[in-house]
Image (cartoon, rainbow, N blue to C red; front, side, top):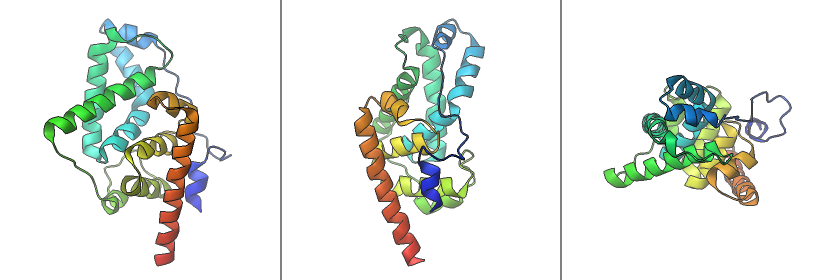
Length: 196
């Protein structure tokens, strides 16, 4: 089954760069209104932040809005950043807090139906059919935390240790949730193939 060669770490054909290296000096530069620092930060983190924000919102357009709001907030709060070796965790926290604030303020829950995602051409980062199948299953079956873990690993290519640090979870908890999510996806896909 193609899905599981796509999702597992040990795929020898996977040449994605799995390690996101963020120079924490970028935040010092941002605090001094250095816009090239924002460009550099965006180039390094855009796909990861997209995967994370779409895992929170389940909607492409809202995810892009949340990404924009997150980068604006990072720009305005860069002077508050304390170097601790976890800049991505800080960025995720900002995105999650903005998402919860927006959801609470608007008192609405917008989600895209999985069948709409499969054919939606707006998912510019999701070009492979295997990726779309994963996204379809993720949005419809998994809890928010499971979605975050699977999306960050499968779409962004982050290692489980990085995800655990970014989400503030233990590595064992992250791995457990990831494997439970994979089981849900496997059961879903095997059921779908049996119906086809």
